[in-house]
Structure formats: structure tokens, C-alpha cells
Amino acid sequence: MPAVTAQAATTITSNQSGIQDGYYYELWKDSGTTSMTLDSGGTFSADYQPNGNSYLCVYGWTVDSLVEYYIVDSWGSCRPPGATSKGTIAVDGGTYDIYETIRVNQPSIKGNTTFKQYWSVRTSKRTSGTISVGEHFKGW
Image (cartoon, rainbow, N blue to C red; front, side, top):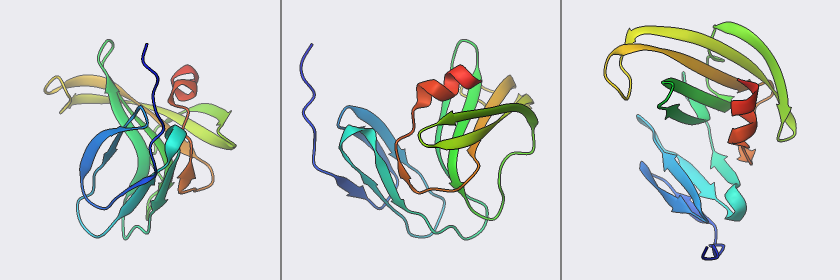
């Protein structure tokens, strides 16, 4: 297996995705200005100053079974999501509340269908660090 060489920090300011230091990333926004710095080793740092409802999060889908997920480290005017509580997990130096909800006949990566959503929402906001996605999967 080839070695992965660490890259210098990269700062992005517009919608884009790619691979940085062996980690996939994506920056997506509707409007306004933003900046996200990707450091080596999978850490992140964001200039996150939301105006209204917004999430600074890891977002994705699993296919088998079909699940939409959010790992939210910071938010704007509304703390998500108002769903069924599944407890808490302690990871990456903080505590996350875990929620589950069912979306019925809603848009998904497989068209309109019914699927679960899982949310991990950090109890105190942060805009930099590392997110250990696998630990959240275990908690769900």
C-alpha cells in the first residue's frame, strides 16, 4: 500500500469537494461568505459565523441500509434536530447528543423513499478539531 504524504494546510472559500491528506472533504453553502482550512491528519478549522439556520457538520449517507446522517459541531440560530433521543456519546473531547428520526417518502440518494436519519449534536459548539466518524457510527 503506498504511503500517504501529508499536505500543507489548504484553505477553501467556495463550494468544492476533494481529497486532502487522504481524507475526503466537501464545503457547501447556500449564500454568504465562508472559509474552511483543512490541516494535515484530518483536522479542520472553520471561520463559521452563521446568519440564521446553519450547521457546521459532517454529512453523509449509507446505502445498505439507507441512512442519512449528520455530525454537528456548531450551528446557527437553531440547534438541531428535535427528534427521538438515543442518549449521548463522549468523543473527540466533547459530548454529543444522539437523535434518530424516520423520514417518510422524502428525497434521498435513492429517490423518494422512507429512511432513518441519525444526528450527533455536540453539546458545546466548536469550529475546529477532528471528528471521529466511526465512533459516531458505533453510538448510533
